[in-house]
Length: 423
Image 1: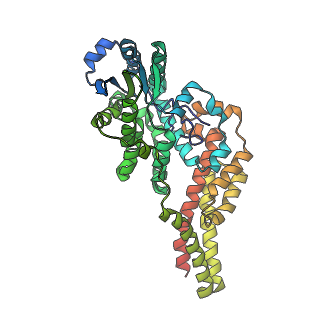
Image 2: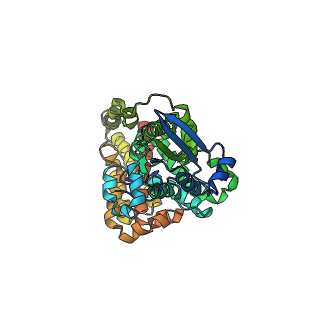
Image 3: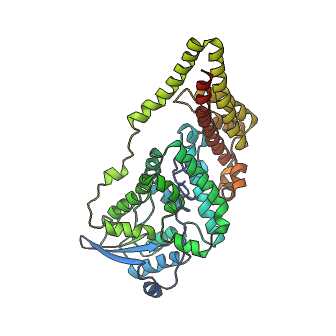
């Protein structure tokens, strides 16, 4: 399934079958192939590999000229194959523009991908607003590359790693606090679009869109940059080098060119890059140990402090979890029944590592206010504004899941010291 037309940041969708893949690449057009060769000497790079003639075309995801240049270069070179910086899901989202309408929001919640989907929708919003402000057609760069390839009879070769793998690996290395930072960083980015000027756009030409938006997170978690940028550089390098044909044009974001060039003659293990590491045994153990320790704390309170102490501890636990989880649901403008479900579920789900309060409230919201076809149809327009995220039933369900889970998690951290203080 898929959603958007953007980022997918966010493989969203059910994990993002296609995370607004169109917007994942905000693109533009150039003037004349000859002039571009002169004015942009660093834009085209000719490389050789096992007798193949490979042309790297580094495009600016935020430059109105790149889309035109893509067409002109492919028409002039007439390659056997055109490599595009797309994976299968993003390619299909371009080919099947209405595929996202089949998204099963309940399945997204059950598969624990709400946070991921919401983050990608926020990224899609960022890209879409830039596109509107600078009169850019989202996805035009890759669309033109595909159209030009078909026009000259060239094969189309998908060179990017599956967005699902990239985001799954990224998510695996991010803790709750980092995910919250990412979420609010993306939300704040929506309001900053009006402050972006041409100079900022020029700076963004040198970076991958994900790299630009996740810069702050990358500083605290260098491994995120490795996954989003460095590993993809390696993946792109391998796919381009091994593409079929004697003459190949590879259309990629300019931010990936240096990484590809530096790894051009390096041996690359594709299996390692496509493998999502399993959760560590430590994390699996901790998710059970923490609830058990909290239950042990309750028992300690009853046996060593008496019934009153134990009761007070339980009261603080219930109040902290219920109030903060309910507040999260309220901030998402959830249905009254959803708010009630979050208040009731939080104290219990916080002690069960297999269930989260947000999943309960999200499902209640989905059934209380069932999304309609028009909600899916309006999604691309609604995500352009903060108000739209709360107005659209699909994104509001995601907000309910995320905000309730955040509130419940904070409730646990708040409750523990209060319980200890009672002792």
